[in-house]
Amino acid sequence: MFQKNKKQVNLIIKDRAIRYMVNNQPTLSGIVDYGEVQLESGIIVDGKVSDLDGFTAALRMLVSNKKWKNRKTSFCVPDASVTIREHFVPKQLKKQEIKSYINMDLEDNLRLPFSNPVIDFVVIGEENEQVKILLFAYPKDRINEYLHAFKQAGLLPTVADLSSLSLHRLYHELGYAEEGEHLLLAQWGRDAAVLTAFNENKPVFTRQVKSILTQDAWEFSPEAEEVTWQGSEAELNESIDAQLTMLERFLDFYQYSVMDGEKQINKLLLCGDFPFLSKVENYLKENYKMSVLIIKELEEEIQVPAKFADVLGLSIKK
Image (tube, rainbow, N blue to C red; front, side):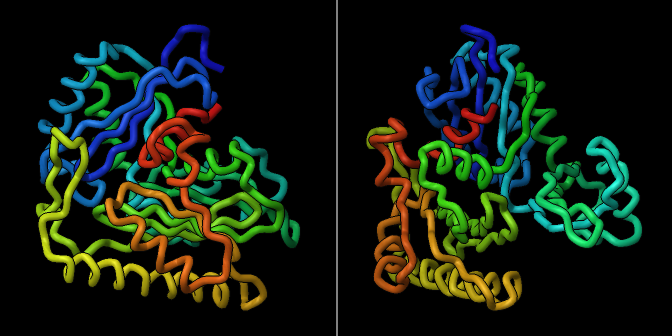
């Protein structure tokens, strides 16, 4: 629990924006400030810091303007390189021993798409005298770049989380989670859509579907405080159609490969900062019989614009 009057900074880093929220306690009523700053093209690319000096300078300016120096900071690692995987460990291991066992398993049985990962896990059950865990892995070199920039800017990073977990935390806090549901969390952004399946309130499978749109064709208007698309409508529709096709394949994979044909996604939560999210919403509601919940429709409950839902979920992490 945060100390009284001790403010905490919470950050979500996107390819073209930093979203922030400050709270004095990890509750929906504890929010004291929020906002976003735009990043120049090329500073963050596909979740990777490509211009460390530029990123650090943007953070320094934000920290200076907001007087955040030496504030404890929570942040979400970019979704692009996160790997989520079920794994089994011996039942007799204590919780603090599991990470050491995982690190040994990395050399033999546990294959990841990158080397030198940062590892975290949650225990999700038992099976055949073994403990089933949900493993989260992220490239260590990428997370170190973020940590370095935060520290150089005067912040004290203390907690790293996933945006999908943050959004599900908010979804659960608002009372929408139901027993036995198979939820697809669809985070639709300007650069990509991140699809994460949840079963028993735990993420079991995730996939990023990159947008084919040219990111330089998005233009931020300071006067309107919004991002506008400068390309053609045909390009826009082609990208949405391609991502929706991948969503359909994701649903099939979950049903037939993850659930062996016995269960399927029966609820969808749509969120994100995509300016044309209503196009995606209309397609989903017209073509699927499952329940579709839109974060935008919950703005009165969360009391902040819908695009801040992920950083709000991070802020209430206890």
